[in-house]
Image 1 (cartoon, rainbow, N blue to C red):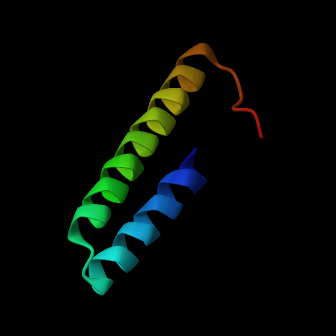
Image 2: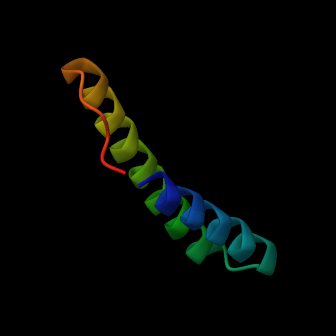
Image 3: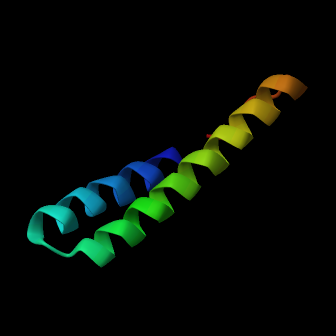
Length: 54
């Protein structure tokens, strides 16, 4: 999930540099959602004492 967040963040940066503001905002929003889902998985795994699947 963190890989997806990083990928969409890079795409947002590239789209922003190239002048595609709407697309950059969309990619940034998707990256933020992926990051928070990843963060939720990490917190749940930490609380339950389980390891994350690789």
